[in-house]
Amino acid sequence: MRCFYHPSAEAVGVCVGCGKAICRECLVEREGRSYCRECAVKAKASAAEPRDWLVALLFSIFLGFLGVDRFYLGRTGTAVVKLLTIGGFGIWYLIDVILIASNSLTDARDQPLTRADEVGIAWMPTVAGILNIVAGVTRFVLSVAILAVGPTYRIESFWFGMPHVSWLMASMSVVVAALLLVLGVLSIMGGVYALQRRAWGLSLTGSISSVLYSPLLGIPAIIFVVLARREFDIKESLKS
Image (cartoon, rainbow, N blue to C red):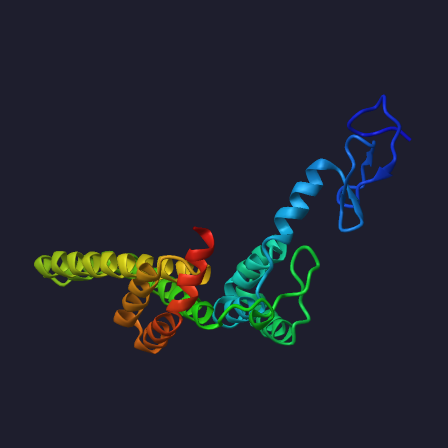
């Protein structure tokens, strides 16, 4: 058997990633398994990014009907189907919540999800990040809905003989939608930074933005970000 990359060389093994025959020059040993150079790089990158159980669970509960939980796990194909069917008409959504809650669903690499306490990471920034992202996404959807409804004010007011009202209502809808969109982007950015334990100030700003739309989501997010500031400082110190 000849090497896939070097046909003139004799193969000494088969890559466990792609199944291609590889010679001694192409062979890379990793954790007792044989890889070609390309698959070894992918395996190293994948191993450096474990999927967190709590993040997956919160994504599944709050945004599972959009397939966000499966996108996070790297299961892109089924995530798209779940998105198009609005969480499998609710049935798939419930099944995934149960599977993730019981830690029975693996990621795209067939690796089990890692619990936060197993890797020594506080859960507060994770929860705050999810709350901010949920607030931001719902605000984005609301702003799009307001922009879609805005033109109907002009049409209805025109037929009822009140054109000045039409322009006023349409202008107000655009201003409100733009404000919601800006606040939504701030919440999403703050949520992403909180999940990464980066930029404590921006994470707090995103949480404050969430309060302006949904105190139920924003207030807990602020509390968690403030209490978990030490986690952000530790992450920053490790980078420096």
